[in-house]
Length: 215
Image (cartoon, helix red, strand yellow):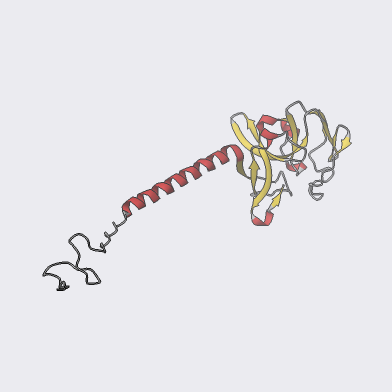
């Protein structure tokens, strides 16, 4: 006598037609995936952007305060090296790391009474040196100073605002002049500049593009 393969009414069978007991089906339908929490993802993305922007602002503030600044040239005292309206970047760390060098273009604070403004000039003489100028020729400790940055059409004999008697630069000071010797308010009028009043070293003209240059 053979078993009847026909399943009883209501008895489950698998894909191959084999009768299986309840709860023993060979294939279980997967649970449907839960839909992502779109609102939570958007909140996380927004928080990430807030953090990125906050960090960027803090870094920009620190850089602006302690490392880098930009300065707009006002006037023609540095002609023709710099022009009125030129924008330059100033390295504010330079003189925290080393002493000023002769020839550096520097931004400095100039205080007169209640007026405080920034000037841009060139370092001509260093602490302990004696600087003198006669007929537009500058000498340091009695030796003529080569100044290839001067424009011979701007700096001409008799057009430098007069001679400068020998002047000793004190310790921790520098003597600065504008490249336009006949049109510059500088150490010839203000005296040697305390190094603490140096904002930093101007190192590049970045605008306008036509004036772009390293200093």
